[in-house]
Amino acid sequence: MTDYVKPKVLVSKCIGFDSCRFNGGIISSEVVDTLQEQVKFVPVCPEVEIGLGVPRKALRLVKKDGEPRLIQTETREDYTEEMKHYAEGLFSKIGEIDGAILKNRSPSCGTTDVKAYADLDKSGVIEKAPGIFGGAVKDRYPFKPIENEGRLRNFRIREDFYTSLFAIARFRQRVEGKGSISELTDFQARHKFILMAYDQDKMRKLGRMAANPDEKEIEKIIQDYRELLSKVLSENPSPGSHVNVLQHAYGYFSDELENREKSLFDDYIEDYRKGKVPLSSIISMIRSWIARFDRDYLEEQRYFDPYPRELMDISDSGKGRDL
Image 1 (cartoon, rainbow, N blue to C red):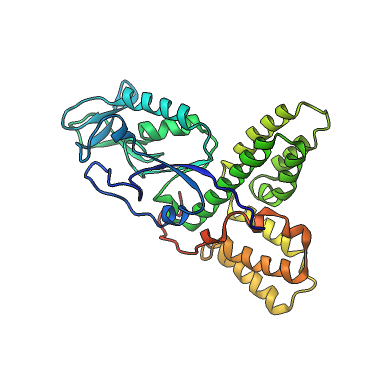
Image 2 (cartoon, one colour):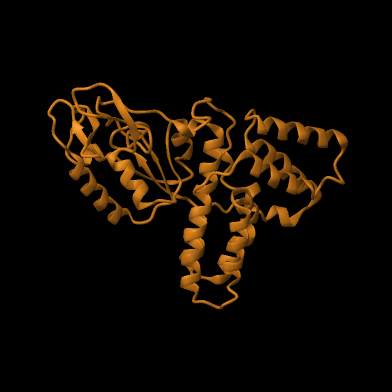
């Protein structure tokens, strides 16, 4: 199965696209580099877009009256409203996206872990919060896969991000793009194992929606399905949930496998539970059995071919493992 779509991904421009950081620097990311041929990136640098130059004075999140404000440390200028206004204009311009990769810990683009201070003159951090632009992205696209480049160095987080990103892109371009109930039922059938890993109860609910027993308007069914699908894919599945799906698939071959193959599968499952190997390693093993035993039903399941194989990478910095 090689008919991949290209997701539309908002990305911080300083991550490999332009030397536009506050100090004139640029950030390297193997993930972004690898994705270049597989997605349609929309690079933005909100700080430059609101008129701040390169290089520029550093910005800081400062809590004022319970709200984070984007303050330039040296000039003490408040750029919060300019940043929010820019974000709204950008969203109107670019429309729907399938996901985002934003700069880690940036007071503008950070998604969750930006240091917020009581004021400009005190060094103590009082909380961690989203940056002003990053928070606006999460508010506008609440259930889309949105990550920072730091967390994507962890292979479990990266695999879940890719899976959600490409599933949402397929739904947007094929089901919503064609507005066809047959496309919806085909999507549901091919994504059954993915949805099983994320939430079995909601998988069944989505199946009932796709069947449309009440014969509702197609547009309404697709809209309701999209909303629930996005919510389901926004919560990363646990390793245990993936193990359940893998063992379910293993049952299609277990009577025909040799003992040493069964032992190898068990070893890989245990290593996956411990975070020693990525999910893609076991999927590759099962995919070889699908071809060997000619299991057409499993071959149609996107779980075993969730995103381009060029993105399958076992490297892991170890950082962000427990986030």
